[in-house]
Amino acid sequence: MALVNELLDKLIVEEVGSRLKDGAAVVGEIEILEKRIKMNAHVLDSSVPQHCNYCGIGNYRPVVNIAQGGGATAVHNFGFNLVGAPVWLILACDHCSNIQVFRPDLNGRGGANDENWMRFAGAPMS
Image (cartoon, rainbow, N blue to C red; front, side, top):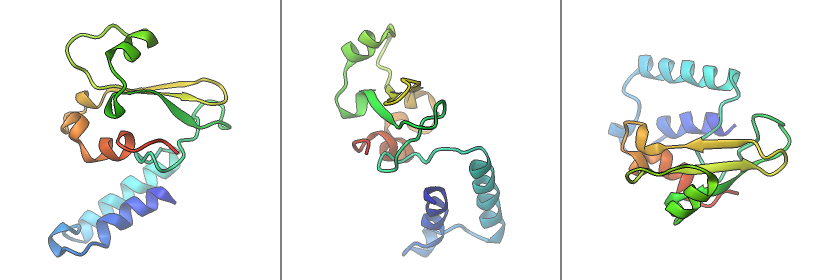
């Protein structure tokens, strides 16, 4: 349902200029939504439980989150050698310990300032 809410957030807005521009744009967004639903994609929102891709039982919890003050030492203690000032989010499943690693500074959309990243990493995981 959270994936559908992402689309609705693009359709139901107060500012007319912020809405999707036409029917073709809506169709494009629906096609993306269908693909994401079929592949069991996750919503990039930390207020939505992030179910484990491996065991399907547990939920991912942050192990390292630079956006919330997890520093270079935490990343290094996890086993990564830092060069420069990368931004990290490392999640671990609370059931099977499957790991998911994110580097928003590599997404080409503003890194840690990207709106999706901030929604995903900026708030505490539920």
